[in-house]
Image 1: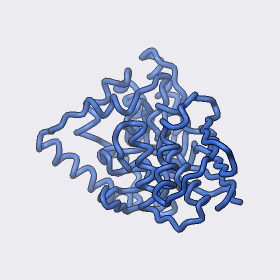
Image 2: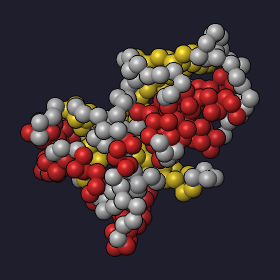
Image 3: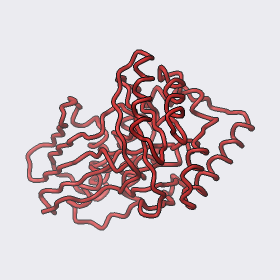
Length: 306
């Protein structure tokens, strides 16, 4: 067993338009960095910045301990999570911590842990954070690129690695508010009109084709959602203004990242102007916001192990 492991795991955009609980896209930045030490006397989890999370009721502990217990390893550990992904932002904060924790534990155990097992363990972190063991975020954070969940049990995932994706920019606007995933999921209706379901099937299949063809304008065109977004956007004050501002500034498409409140836009140029427009629109709705520009990125990586 290794005594120290350091890994990083990226932020993600879950759902990615019409692919609710199915599509995921890894972002090049930001990333969480997880440092796992095994030669300790008690289990402790700390975050930087300090979010004062309880040691045994958080996503990272749930993911790491789920994997350890499965392999009959019951030793204390110290985990330090340097949070590059802000909690409650909608860009996969709990997923990044869960994936990083699970990967670090797998490396520390010196066991040949497969991707599907890492995804299952990471989903326990998502269940702890949101109440549902969805895997669209964790899959993208682990594998990188664009991922498509085809089965939850057993875990089956299709993916397009980042070097096979088209080149485009992603502008992310994070309003100064927290929107819990549990709340965003609670408002989703249990049944939907058949015509809306058909519309999303068309959009989803078209999105996969556009990704494979590296057709950036079409990716923006198909970045629509008739099933979930209409119910979630009222939870994000100013969403319609932000969407319009981004499109007026040249964005190819706009949607909510994950459960929100982050809003993202696709661009093949003019990303800085789009970011300014989105920030101004949130301000007009009464919220300050932070914006950043990134691109599709790589998955979780081991930085050090000894």
